[in-house]
Length: 193
Image (cartoon, rainbow, N blue to C red; front, side):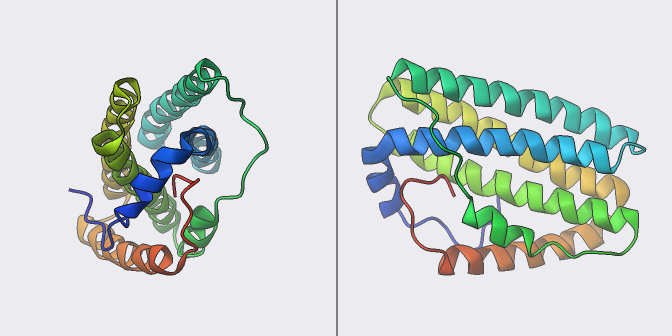
């Protein structure tokens, strides 16, 4: 369904499960950044009513996810800690083409958001499938389903403002570029991405 060109190395989940505190902390920051990205889309394109309405719902859900992860951290005796740079997202943001029509700009930003949601969905699926803790399995199953929904929403929104074939062709380019980022990125087991 996601169409990722390079799957996560299966060893990631084995090692990540041994540093669940770090994964939860990074996950919290990912949810916070996802909400902020959605707000940014609304600020940039306030005249696109469907985008504003659909992304507002996503922002609310992402913020509730942030709160859920904070609650999970607290229940385990962990705190949020210092903010972290997300090298994956930094590199992926360079894939975004600048300029062009507003519709093209909307597509570029939505496809980057979709890519982040797709990779998060894949990682959460690995956690759901491989963690031994039943409550964390359920926790990550729910996040996996939600991220899949966000990924689909962003792709579909891009098609509202651009021809479907244009979106499909550009999505293929983003998928290829993302695979190269994942292939060359330093392998981190304390990060979602």
